[in-house]
Image (cartoon, rainbow, N blue to C red; front, side, top):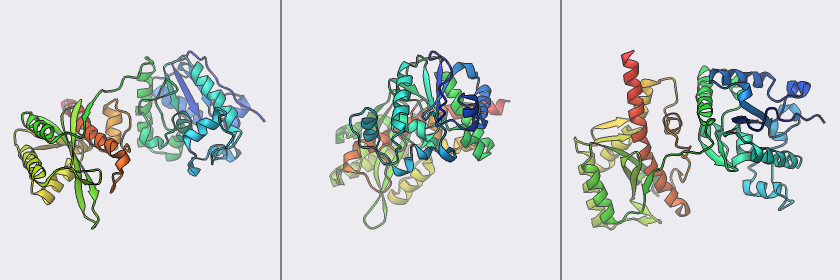
Length: 384
């Protein structure tokens, strides 16, 4: 069995981690020198990263049969990450489903390598390295996010083979955006994330006072979350108002399986909310706020205006790029991917209810950070 070991000093700024070596890597006994490796080198150069800026390694050091990493780690079988870590540490001998026992020595060596790495950012390339390092997957959602694991800054990117397979100029452009973030993060080991005050479970008096505070501002963030009812309808489960990109409140309408307020309190809340949303001096900013405002008008007779929509602004500025809030967060902010934290369409599990409300509050904050950056970019484009 031939193994391909790491290349590059442990004190280089970036540590790229792939899945496993391929045919050319085995022939030359070097990682990332085949077709995918050359694609990664090309993307790196376009992003301002030299090969000598990085250390290169893989999760598995031997070539996989048919170059299929699922021979060693099959995420399709949904291995449990805590059980995987316990097995890696030798705390149990029960091999998790989807894991080849040969993986243990490779991952142990990889964890030691990450621990001894003296650079600033670790870059898992693809789902498998991301999962091995963090227990998270869905690389297309988390790509470019600033994460933390093993006391290291982690910025996941898609694997270069995925870029090659897609043959898409948009996919290549997205990969470059991810790598530009890697370059920016490679100069400092510190993880600097935005601090946001997300207020949840307010008392009635606090909720009323907060809505009154919003009414005195010229611009607020606004977001609603909906849930399905037993009869198949849709009702608003909570709404969030942000006074700034760093502070917002989620006000529940349903909590712990029942109405959050008495009938009289809910009437007063909706009356205050209607005054705010219909106030022409307060601009309401949201992601796909067209849906939120049409829902408020259709279900509650509230005409929400004036409004600014980050999704529409993005479509105007970059019609060929994604317009979802997950991408906008990654492109315009330092907020790590959070769009599946407590978010379950149709249900809100009581055990995750607080996460759901924080998710709602964060959505309202984020748009106030994103919109001015898109508008500045549109203005700059118009001036050219």
